[in-house]
Image 1 (tube, rainbow, N blue to C red):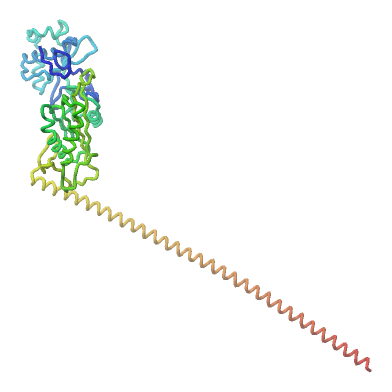
Image 2: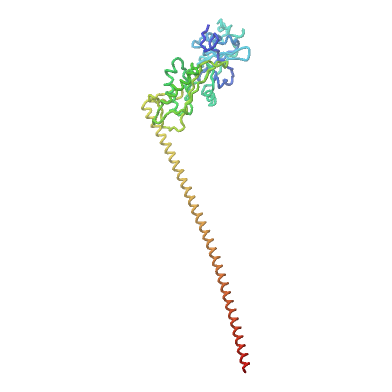
Length: 426
């Protein structure tokens, strides 16, 4: 009888096995379950055995039976976690056996070719569907986590739930796993938050994740966190840890918009929520206004840096070297920025000069046009005055001639009258 170690499971055989559909072209993926494979290292190989008895009641003990069989064949380091029973739509299942090297795979493959020796194990008849032997033993190389696209990683890290014992991939430059359990949350969580947040920020990653409740080799297990404890963990452990982080210059701090905390529920393979079993997912984002020469440090003034899937503590000499490199890089960038800015200023000044020149030319042109208009108006005014003078002269001349004529007529009349008077006297 196998001990039940699966939370809230009623099965006497422990956790229900992870059921996966085998595709010979690519590994099936679900944003809720993660990458469902048995791969731990990129060089692992998986052997597929067909003609396995298809009976749900036998699934978990079937893993143990196959593991025992493989060990008798010489694969002594095999564990139950290296054996997977794969779901099938037919009347038989398939089984996957993880081999950690090409040599181990070749060795085990050759052992299974010896049908007589394999059948000597009394458990074989309880493993095979019928009297037929394992057929179509296949090699299936599972894609490494580095082959996952950014969309795949994004879907996994934004998932609203995870499946127990599903595979999330390997730790990377931006992803760190912690199994948790026991007194981890109260004893070590705060220190780990400071350590890995500082490492992520100093590595200038745009989005990094610390997941509590995931084994080092990438399998979901979860940690025991009830709903009442979520607020306590957030306010008493996570937030104070973030606030304790400082840096160079000392004005650096981790603002609330630079991290996010999610308590993601863990489900069994039948999509049932496992009570109080969560993955604590902490996302850390670097500030967009941060300068390159900035370095974050823990409350103990320890400076960490993230390199691939590991964290490195920088000693004072390395910190000094790092700061010098950053300052040199920053100085070079600032110089380039200043040169570019100076160039832009010269271009702007040149444009301003050209615009000012055009403006002066336009103003001069307008002034010339105004002078021409005034000249024309003045000319017209002179011509008008000349016409008026001419008219006035003609009028005076006419008046004078008319007056002379009147005087001549008057004189003639007087002479005539005088003549008439003289004649009358005579």
